[in-house]
Image (cartoon, rainbow, N blue to C red; front, side, top):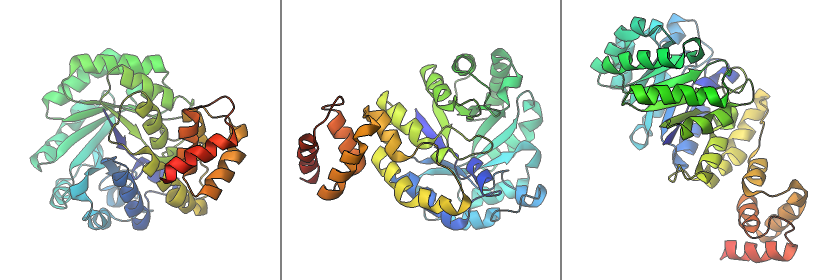
Amino acid sequence: MNLFDNTLRDGGNVVGHGFSLELTESMVRGLLKAGIVDIELGNCKGLGAYEQAGATKAPRDEEYFEVLKPYLPKGRIGMFMLAKCANAEKVKAAAAAGLNFLRVGANASDGKGSLEAVRMVKEAGLICRYSLMKAYVSTPEELAAEAKMLQDAGVDKITIMDSAGTMFPSDATAYVTALKKAVSIPVGFHGHSNLGLSQANALAAVTAGADEIDCGLLGMARSAGNCATELAAATLKKEGYLQDVDLYSLLDYLDQELIPAMVPYGYHVAVNPTDLMLGLAGCHSNFLPMFRKVAEEEGVSLLKLIADVSAIDRKNPPESLLREVAGKLKA
């Protein structure tokens, strides 16, 4: 089971049509360092949308290709492409640039109209992902039948998209269960936060057998946002998944680089890394001033101090315990 980070594609909606080349490179570096290697990026409307859909508030596809060159061997990095925007030359250019995949997107029940796009991607030698957008317009059984048809057409990985953030955990369970019975390829789940349920839906999807969860750093995505990458990483690691993901590296990157970089855009972070760690560790926020004081004086990670002390005493940790644990962190 793995995380599929969509910040640099879906999250591009919060800054126009896509992130700058500088922020793109920053996020790719941060994700790879944290062990998150499946990354979708580019124009938020997909490959070719700059020219075909007037989505010009972003760099061109070719500029993204260029900045990615040093990172392509280190991850599984690719782009989204609306089926209606599929263009053979663009697909070939993506393959020549060294991308790992293209993810074809179309609304649920429109799969037959996407087969030409799937063919283009496969003929170019790329992995073909597929997004069943607005999955809720079909029943789980209808969506499963469409997924089987797309698998037979050559799709390598398929994603259930709750594009309006309307699903409940029981819905995520039903859709994932139906698709896992119908196909042998990996099944992913992409949830939005319009009802505040994207995180719960992600956990339900994984419990039902989902192979992959779509997510976005700081929850960045269209509308109310996606399941936050850092929240998915924290909760799923606690459930025993994502052994290769370095949560502290991810949270440090957010604190030190990405959150400050988003200030000029006025982006509000719903759950910052410190609050996330308080929840994950079961540490009451009343203790936070003491933790901050000791972490600063001892020169240790605040987040690691919270986690390690709380593993010993979550009820009423004394400052002496914090000092003792800080000493071990410095050793």
